[in-house]
Amino acid sequence: MIEKIQELKKKRDAIILAHNYQIPEVQDIADLRGDSLELSRKAAQTDAKVIVFCGVHFMAETAAILSPAKTVLLPDIDAGCPLADMITVEALRELKSKYPGRPVVAYVNTSAAVKAESDYACTSANAVKVINAIKSDEIIFVPDKFLAAYVQSKTSKKIISWGGYCPTHAKIMPEDIIERKKEHPNAKVMSHPECRQEVLALSDAALSTSGMIKYAAENDAKEFIVGTEAGMVYRLQQDNPGKKFYAASAAATCPNMKRITLEKILWSLEDMKPIVTVTGEIRERALLSVQRMIDIATPKA
Image (tube, rainbow, N blue to C red; front, side, top):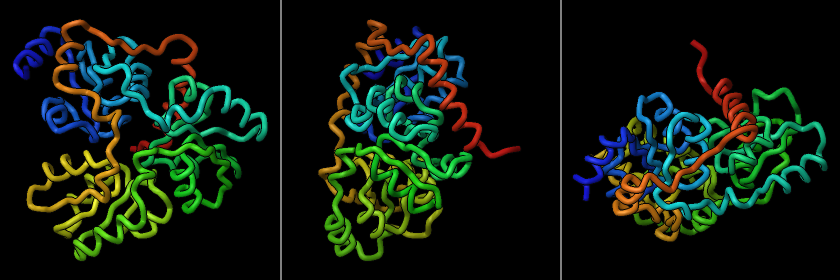
C-alpha cells in the first residue's frame, strides 16, 4: 500500500502533509509534519500541484486559501473539528453587533467563512503577539474560551471571548497532571493553551505543538508530560529518542484526527477526491485575515 501511495504521489505531483496528531503510519508516510498553518505555508511554497492534507477540514481549507492554484485533497471529508463548529458566521455577526467597532481575531481552528468575517487570524503560538499588535483596547476573540483565557493572562487588553472549546483538550484535568507528576517527578510538564487554566497553572510551559517540539529538543530534562492530544507523543518520541514522553491523559484522543488511514490516502490519490475548495470573496477575505497575522508574526529582516 505504501508503494502504491508513493507511485501515485509521483504520478499526481502530490505532497502529503500530516498534522502532529495523526496516527503513526500516516505521520510516517508524510512529506511534511507539523501544525496546521505551518503545513499550509510550507505546501504553498512547493511546486507540487496536489496537496493531500491529513488533518481536519479547516486545515484543508487553510491550505486551499494559501494555494488557490493547487488541488487540496482531504482523505476523509468527515474529519471535522468540534471547536471550529462552535462558531458560525451568524453567531459571529451577532457578537460583532453587540460589541461594534471591536476588531475580531479568529483562531485558525475556524472555518474559512468565519476567517472571512474576521479582521485577523492567529495560531496558539502567535495569539498573544497578534493581540498585542492590534491598535484597540478591546478585542473579540473566537472561538476558544480556554485559549482566550490564556491570552488574557498575557495582555492588558480586554478580551471578549466566545464560549467554544476543544473537547479533546478539555478532557485533560488538573488531577491528570498531578497523577502524572507523582509517577514521573522529574518530568517537565508542557501543555497546550487550549487546555483549562487549572492545567496550565500546573505546567512548566504553555506551548503550541510546534513550541512543544522546540522545547523538548532544547530542554535538558529527560522526561516530559505532554498536555495535548495524545498523538503528539509519537512525534516527540521520534524526534527525541533519548528522552521519554508521557501523555497527560489517554482520554485526550481526537477521534477526528484519527479518521485518516493509509487506505484513505490511497483512495484519495486514486480518485482525486474529496477536494476541498475555498473560492471567490470568502477566499479573498479569509486570506486577508491570515495575511495580517503572518505580517505581524513574521520577524522583520
